[in-house]
Length: 446
Ligand code: HEC
Ligand code: HEC
Ligand code: HEC
Ligand code: HEC
Ligand code: HEC
Image 1 (cartoon, rainbow, N blue to C red):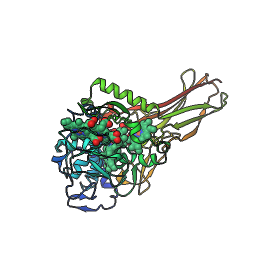
Image 2: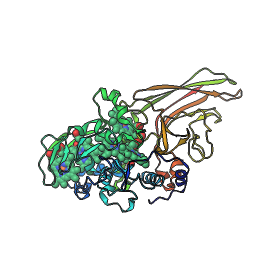
Image 3: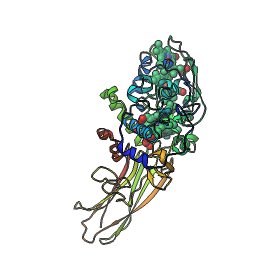
Image 4: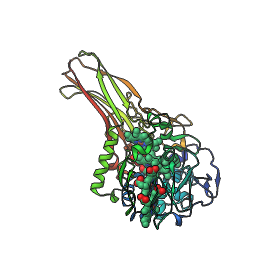
């Protein structure tokens, strides 16, 4: 592994190993997604580069997407390194089975593999082939796709035009939420559910309305599907906009990034609302503040996906007219970390903190950051459409200068800085992205 992780190695040595995996000489095995014998010939997997001349729009959009970045993300690589250290390489395929189907099923990714020397196609991550060569769905988690070997590209174009590069096959399932769920539902080797946007979607208003993942994450447009092809309606954006900024910034122009930011802001603007409602107060008393937050996403919980890495929380502040801070929860310590269990400077310093992220607990009841050490996954996500109210109690000194300004923000951050530092990735700290999903403010006269 490229990343040397002294801290994590230490953690791996002092904790109980997870249950023994079904191991052979090639590490853990799953006949579908982590086969012992190669089921994919890497030479037969086309690079996204080969699609570019005929599908320039799809190729350009995809190349800035997280799917294209899924093997290059330094946080991913560092965590794979940590798992490598914890299991002496035995489980090196586990994390890669979805991030690169081609890599694991061709055995290019095997125990002890190095990202730096992998061939280009596995490094393309969730490349075009991962979706368009999927023949059928075998299970709804952990890369549950059966891959075709006929070279045909699957899609839903009506009467696709013939082309010299590839055959075509109709595949209605590509539009379904279940298709996305094959990779987006992540289950740990010992059975603990880690990510479950499909399960969340299954009882959501979006599912009832027949709205799938693609309807929000792959918005429609009208154009040609291929150079020289007929004009078509209802084609799908391949940016796969979500929370993250474009992955491979070097592959995207400034204009592309601006367009990406606009699409991301538009998506996130639909996610949530916050309202702050003060009760009555007199100087020398306590001001009760009701903060109501609602997940407006019809399709899944907030946050979703890697909820154990993401931070999603309420920040509440009360400030007197002279600038004196009367109350604060959800603010940062001097390291830009929340004052929670993981803060180096103020651990457990924010007793009122309301966080919607999830947390792992190990067999000894202790918090852990790593899914392979976890026996429980504690969740506090807001379900699709769910509204909750939290009360905050603000002490108001007798000599306070009014009015008191109250603000509440629902904030979402891609990674906590302490984790980035723990992984030795300080250079990546500037890429941590903090977004305010919703804000409300009001002034209380005294
Ligand atoms: C072959 C596996 C696979 C399939 C199939 C798949 N995804 Fe993904 N997806 C991933 C991986 C892995 C990532 C994380 C990449 C990263 O950021 O490192 C991801 C990331 C994303 C993101 C970015 C999330 C963020 O934080 O910004 C979105 C949005 C997304 N996928 C939507 C979809 C949709 C919609 C579908 C179905 C049409 C789909 N995916 C199908 C594997 C897959
Ligand atoms: C079942 C398929 C699957 C497996 C197995 C899997 N992942 Fe992922 N991973 C995903 C998907 C899908 C996403 C996108 C979720 C999101 O953005 O919230 C993702 C996102 C991530 C991200 C966030 C990247 C970003 O910033 O968007 C990291 C880091 C990551 N995975 C690491 C790992 C590690 C480490 C393992 C092994 C312990 C692992 N993954 C195993 C499918 C998988
Ligand atoms: C020589 C040009 C060419 C190349 C190279 C090419 N395609 Fe195509 N592809 C086409 C044409 C033409 C169509 C049909 C367009 C139409 O009818 O509107 C098509 C259709 C498709 C469809 C839709 C199939 C359906 O049944 O709905 C998919 C998916 C697809 N291509 C994926 C790819 C991928 C992935 C690559 C690279 C691995 C690729 N193509 C490379 C020309 C090409
Ligand atoms: C009604 C629209 C809608 C539907 C349907 C929908 N999403 Fe989302 N999704 C959003 C919004 C808005 C966000 C941004 C908020 C967030 O990041 O949690 C998001 C965020 C995400 C993220 C990034 C989460 C993170 O914080 O890392 C992933 C991954 C994702 N969606 C996957 C899916 C999958 C898979 C499906 C289908 C099972 C789906 N979405 C269905 C609207 C939708
Ligand atoms: C994460 C899965 C995923 C990846 C990766 C992906 N696609 Fe797609 N693609 C889809 C889905 C879903 C559709 C919409 C199918 C439908 O309309 O039913 C689609 C549609 C298409 C179409 C039909 C026209 C359109 O845009 O709707 C073409 C052509 C295509 N993709 C080419 C590509 C190429 C080229 C790449 C790589 C550069 C790529 N795709 C990567 C999922 C994916």
